[in-house]
Length: 232
Image (tube, one colour):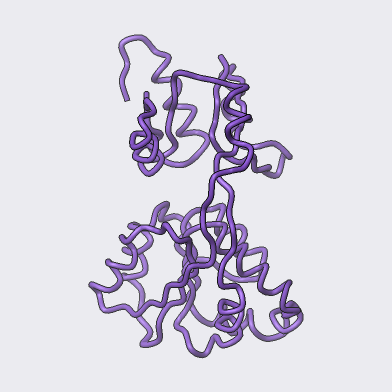
């Protein structure tokens, strides 16, 4: 069976996208087509804030793109040496909260110690942050322009100060139309509720929603669709 995944390819330690690898275990041939691209915003402002960890109680990352924005700041402003010598240690003296293992891995690569990766989504991360000792200083939250309101609202309700700033925006991938024209599939499986809602808003059919954004959950969802008299 051929499966179309509307996502970017990301290699794991084996050099293969984990979704292609997992679906292949069940005889499924996956094709990846990226539908989104990203533009980075306000990097000079982010760079300035990263240079002054004393003004913040910690960091929050809910997406890999936000971590990439930090990495770009360090590279473009020639701050890599300062980061390695002093800045990263000052940030590591504070809390660095993340959603998901992919984001945590990128945070580790820039020398920061991540916590909260097990939370899996913004709501669970907010619950984790609220359970931790709270600083009087705001948490710095680099994020995208279409971030959800769940995490900021939950922290605000608990009196936890936070400063969010948009450091990237999502735009359609320039090659999406041509790629989709060459590969059409009537049946879709969505990775998570946010994707399901976005597809439904565009009038696209959703046969099943994966219980979590992992290759294993996606493969399980597809197998349910293929089983007679099954539902998701």
